[in-house]
Image (cartoon, rainbow, N blue to C red; front, top):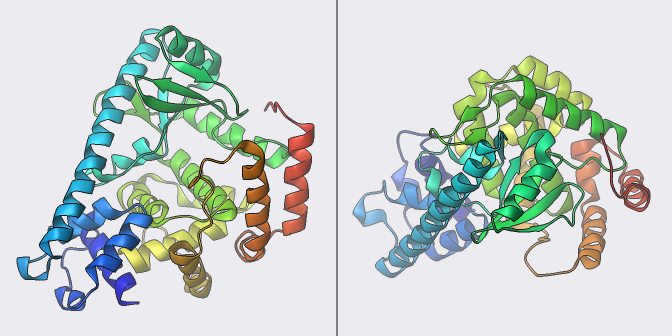
Length: 357
């Protein structure tokens, strides 16, 4: 428990959601355990930023500091490479009159005190109606393009993996999912997408991110579990962009599409664990016990899907197995019947291989 409390303190310090650090609570912390947990949760660079604010006498041993600093430098270099290469691809698209809207990691990283400390896996983009043109232009520029998933293609451009999304979210086998996708795409077409640091990469509007970040994190939560990085993304979004969101509208839409309870749990954890102001998106404290269970699952019970190189069919079976093992999530968070959801997923895969909205 001391490691978890210390992790929260240093995350709040690194994310700058608190001004003062209660240093006395960090005395005697197991730095090796804290480093291992921060690394496994994808937040080691944020915690490092918090450590850099500590007095010298409270910092980790020198050997661990060097190891930590080296790994943070690797995150920075990877981010710099991804940033430069994605700008190059976006420039190619812009010359052809195509907007490159960035989803997830890159779009959220700009909200962090140090964007380069927010690790990104693949770069996700949405080109609107230009999905096919985007694949063709990337291939003409020397990229390898594979369209194995109905939701997005994989583009390997100058060593950078880009997911070119045809759909922002999973839509197969569900009328409501298709309605939700049309809503997301309508927001992107009707509201302003802001250029990131003056480049051709565009950040989605706040209303879009409020829905999309919730939906994306919920999908991970149900099939494998989320990490603290998902929670940090939501916390920084609420803290930095929350005033731009129409929360009354969000509550209505999120409730209609089964997202509200999960969004409220994320917000409770963002307030309690990461120090986000609770007046931006007020949540009923009656959800505290459920928030505790979600946090425990996040820290200790994640069931990774991408930690090994498994082929498509074993991965699909693992997803169904994870859904069954964590069926409490469907019951308590989504208030859905797990068996109905498993049957829907299997039926959708068998009958709707190439969905349209």
